[in-house]
Image 1 (spheres, rainbow, N blue to C red):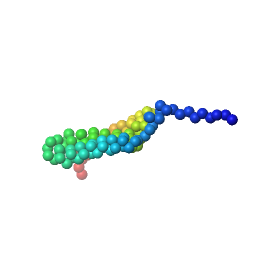
Image 2: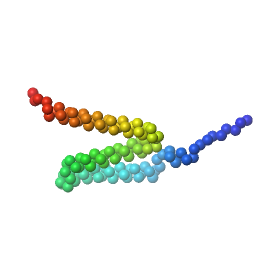
Image 3: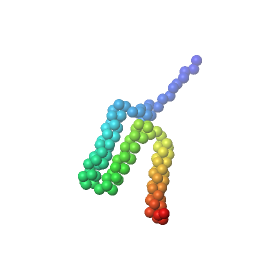
Image 4: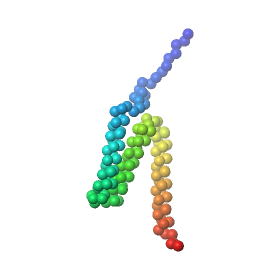
Length: 117
């Protein structure tokens, strides 16, 4: 009879090993710290006048996008996917944000320039 050889790539195993308990707790800690910082900004820094509402909003948006990155990369396993899929999803996400921004700008323009009835 013939021998069957099963070929496995050992170098690719580390790349797709997935989430270990240590990684899960590390990502959880990062997400928890970002959430705590967001709460400090929303409940203490802005009401006490340490940050303006405008600056606080920008910081809050950046922190929320950072949290979204960690959730998508680690818990939705996008970090372990191929580059093509990562680029396809990233470009789609950028266009969605772009179109939402355009709609908000246009909606504000219409609200300001429409005659009141």
